[in-house]
Amino acid sequence: MTVVFAVAAALSVFVIAAIVIGREAHRLDALAPRVVYDIDEATSFVADRLPSDSQARLTYDELRKMLVLHMGWMHSKGLQPQDVIDRRQDITESVVFGEETLTAFLLGEAAEARIEVLDDVDVVHVVRAHLDYFEAIGAVGPSASSTDL
Image 1 (cartoon, helix red, strand yellow):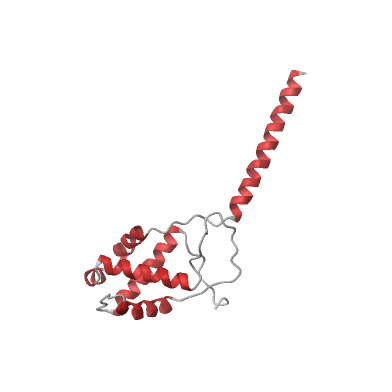
Image 2 (cartoon, one colour):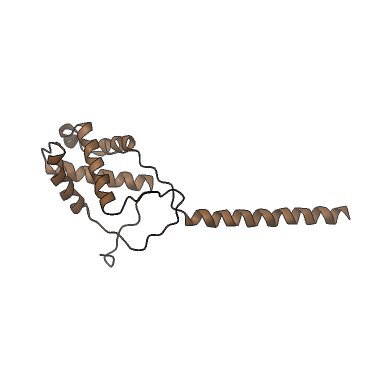
């Protein structure tokens, strides 16, 4: 009798654990992953990946200002929503943008932000490295196919 009771108890514990773990796994799968953007980390990441010519022409403060401008642009396009922690993924449409669009925006905003851009290619390198940072922290989705354009 004791053996039957022990087996029933073990089976009950297993069933309860399986239900709880399954429910939590399903809940966590539906939530947006926690991606943390750290401006200091992003600035260091981008600075380390710039070619030496671009590193020589851009100061650390100018680079940081460009990254802040980039984040502002993303927010204006709806790509940086508020309150994303523990929020269900509710993306209903694909958002596609090219490096050229962002580069043109940063070139236009650089003068207003008092960033002296000596060579336009520096902004191109900053954009590419910043997008690489987003990919490294898991903040971007897949690249768009030609059917998405």
